[in-house]
Length: 302
Image (cartoon, rainbow, N blue to C red; front, side):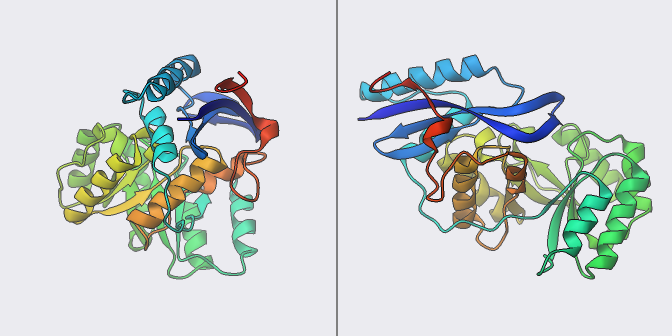
């Protein structure tokens, strides 16, 4: 078995605050196993040294003919993609709306074909969020929106928002609570259609309730593709919509998530628009990692 591991650092277009961390570069690892690539993209709050240590230990075990025994989900996802390459046609990306209102509206007006659905990241500023929802609904009649609260907004902010928008345009509100129990309470108390992120549910499919509409899977936070398949099938069996989303992986990681979405949710776009925050995706036109962005840390010649 031939294995190589590379470290990458991809610059962002500009400094960005993500999950309370100021990010200038996206750090991660590429693993190549017998000519097939995987992206190991740890959460921005994770310790990169711990990720590197576990990844290298897993590669050593693979070379010895043993199971990798990786425990970190992002390591399991990258290794899984390299060991069992995905082959499905990639799903399209859902438009991501976040940032300044003028930029969002200007970009939306410039689209030749207006999407029928988009993902809006809420800021918590009720006037801003509600105004943007109304303006988008006027600009694109019939537009469907998913609203990402991300567990960041207070109950009062969410109540205020819901009072000032046409809720008929909203498919679901993602993670209004900081955990599954809080989201359930808010949804049942206020009658909000909601979605849950699988990682907030401990990586399992939550018990259904009337207001629960969807489950969002971020594969690099859940583990190898096979686990995502099981979660998607279980959620769909319980009547939930399933949507896959990225977590600011490199272009390689986004490509794999798009392929997994094409397999699991062929009729639902994946949220992969966050790739635009990278100055370059780290891959070439053929979808292969670019040599100038790589630092070899394991394998022949290291």
